[in-house]
Image (cartoon, helix red, strand yellow):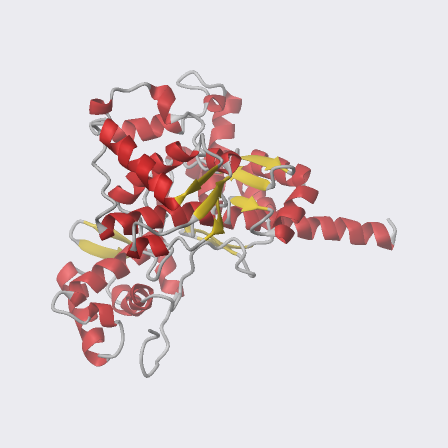
Length: 404
């Protein structure tokens, strides 16, 4: 093979590896938001499509003329570790109210190509007033306007809404704010990745709260794996996809989180070979340990959330709490963890100012432990928080004060 041919092969491998990690970190990429990333995915569409389909069973949808690429990631294990987040300072997770407004706003935007923030708010008021399952939406309430703005900004970040004139945040201070938007309905419709649309379940509204988890599972049910009478090929396909989905979508994969069949597949010669090849093709470093697997992206492209990370007090506290937590293999009680957090706040009174209050230590503990559980570094066993094996990779170094 000539030198030029070798260079072309190497360039394609590097592009595919980068494209895999780009899509894992941001499953929706628009030409407007990331021109170079979108062009790379467009250029390497075929190998990227085949890689995701074979290893994870995820569909890659690319629309060059409409300017977006969407990786339809499906998770069969339900969890809340990656909530939608408010894009203002603090990046708090969406609450029930914001998720409700997100669904209503998306539905109201579909038939209109252009709107203003005021007209859209009026549509939401009317939609909530005519549906008895929805609480009223009151634009005279500042908390309501803040929730509405958080939803709008999330849709802007995904490219479903484009601000033509004005600033979305201005609606928080005044319901008379003037902001003009253009709606990208094609991107809006691609936000939902579930293979079964909720409307197809045809469940009466009063039954939804009672059957919520069952209905969530139904929206991600995939026919390709069959049912109770699945063939051997379908069972192997399901095992491959379920194991690699979790490996490429979670910070760490512990063996004790897998079913017996999944663990048998992962530890088989075929399973190990497929995992190693997939990690190499994606440009990852694979750590294989007795207790599980860890993928490391040297460039941080596939990382949607980082640890360690000094961008928030809760994440700094999470790292600092790992030291007493890993020193107690049997775990720590909430009271013991709160005492550790209280000591941190006492030692560093200028740090974590939002937690410097009477109940601050309890709130900081809760937020820090949520970080650790979301990253697979700790779990709750009874009334204790217990370190997971991956937690022992981290050690805090001495400093004058934590990062603020």
